[in-house]
Length: 413
View 1 (cartoon, rainbow, N blue to C red):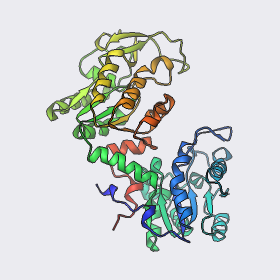
View 2 (tube, rainbow, N blue to C red):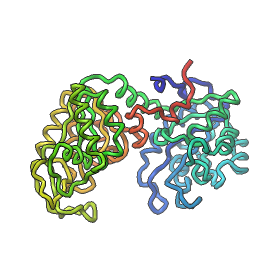
View 3 (cartoon, one colour):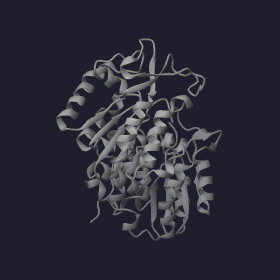
View 4 (cartoon, rainbow, N blue to C red):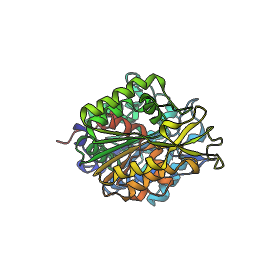
């Protein structure tokens, strides 16, 4: 797989050179305070390595979903402050809403080897999130003008062909610079890439979450790669209905019933196992608020869901079935919770799967997003081999797609 042979920060001489690093500092903020610094911590090894090499380190990232132009609530200023603490040295923040304007140019010109600056939120520029063919060519060129080399360490954005993710590499390369991946990207490529292309078997894939539509290509691609595919979460009910069972008010995508039927047939033809829930935890309404622990539940077999009830989590028999399937696996990839895990009463299925993964000797890879949140929340994070930092990116990787941010880096000689 071409994606596995990319230049890294160890493959070029960064001493005295201006190195632009695209990070993923898309951290949650509440009242201007960072509530989870996981992504900042994940970026530190690459930044520290470049400092140690004597590079002039220019960091950039997006934050939030900037819709109505720049606003201070999504400024990267709090990230610069936290980074300064973590690195034990000043990370100079450039608050310029234009990102690459005069303030940035002057700050870069004044840098000494080992200095670090952080540019303002790339989305403030407004040309970051457009389609690839319109991606801010001018913005990408201006970013490249600030630097000699480029390192992409933002796996969470690697599936987007944005100015600061992939377009910038064209202009860095044009002036003879190196385009590499950082340590975080390297780790993601190694774990996810090997899981999909070269897994140690038995290989079990677990897919959950609400919608079948989000995972169409992933289901199809993983069926060809894995030995057992476990399906839970809201998307399971479309499969259950495709088998001819009554699912009451459970989440269902009727436009995908035929597809689910085809996937069940595909598994059979390939000699693969698809495991679906055999029982469910049901309620008569969706919890509101979502963490309302007083919601009344009961457990029924999967073909006995009453017309006025809805499945909200996998039941105890399914938990045991899924845990058993994971026991002897050598590689496990998990993307998507088994139920409404934000609710303590409806989190047992997700917790059972997390616990089964924590107890297995397999290489366990959590595909970002809600699964990563669940594993962190339930206290199993340190028991997993790898927790991906990118939900959307890891899904596209599992679909077998080329990720622009990975693809744009130089291949090793």
